[in-house]
Length: 487
Ligand code: UDP
Image (cartoon, rainbow, N blue to C red; front, top):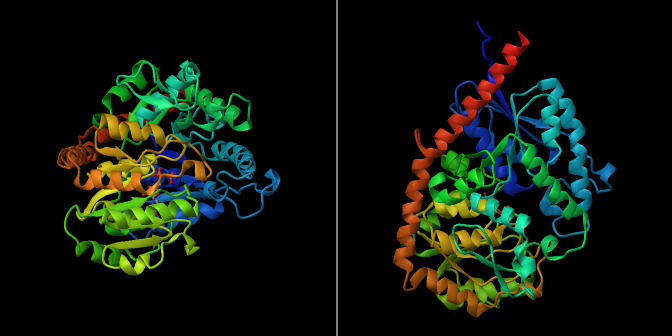
């Protein structure tokens, strides 16, 4: 007789940025909700609260327990000031290299941890390429979590392998992404600075190691669902040869208002106050505007947005991260907009807002979590990509899913600048098109249909539910094989 399986222990190690930590917590919840599976999240001390406040271990009776393990963040050794443990504190600044250096130094603690704890599976962020070799040292399967869509994974791969951006003579000329099932065009300005500039850089070298480690890993977990982008899940599996499990939309693992309100940072508004305001509005009548956890704008851009929402005549909730200094607000704006709009300075309870029936459109920077949360809520989108893989997500939403209207963002940039400015008229045009354009009804119907598909995918027996079951069974098989070898 073979050895009896113990409880399966899945360890998750997200990158220190809210766009990575939030879905990782949701994934940990999904694992821990299954019989015989235990989940642990590794993070650093200043990021612990993001998880503990959301989990409320021991307080919520029916919620699965998730363990948190804090690794010391080696800021000093990497030449960083103490207190910087999250990407959004360093994005686009000269401290970014030090930040990545510090994250690389976390490998030593992971090595000790894996040796001591011997989990059955390590789900480590794409930004931790060294995790694959460490896991294999202890015979632990390492799964990569990128936090992006299958479409973007494929787009990145054809760009990496075929470099189509080298076939155009200017930064504004469009090129086609080869070998994709749809004809997708981009300009050189819309791809990352590292790809655009041919010079060697630390970040460029790092991105190469991300791919190398992904190729050596056990497989890839994707926060998406098969029915949303079947061509691209198939392409990534069959043509690019990766093992891929679609287990999303993971945000749907948050069922109660309380769970939804606790995602990410402390909200700057009470969720009940927000809901009360939304309850007073008609269905599909309010635009929600939010650009995620890391992107920021120059004052001139905030000013253009303010003028545009006022000129559009639409009702809105607008989340402003870096808007404490009010020089960007047109005179008397808030007084005039008292009935029509609400500005949230800081952090919004996004999922709660998006799921409210009063929300008729979402102006988004196309971060994948936000995009998928918008899709899961059945909301059409105005797409305003800024950096990362957001320009790919825009194409998915506007050209493949056909639930979005582009605002016309032209340039990829980690640091906000006047060159990336989108003018008031372009914003008004997109807002009007999404709320009251020729195709508004069709777009809205398509969005509502995707919402239904998303919900079905995560229900028991749905495609994402089954993919997670298969993954867990496979890790169990791997665990049993090892136990049998040991006896
Ligand atoms: N988010 C939120 N409130 C905010 C801003 C962001 O809850 O005010 C959440 C949002 O729901 C999403 C995540 O933060 O889950 C942002 O991730 P995304 O991939 O969209 O963008 P990133 O922040 O990584 O650019």
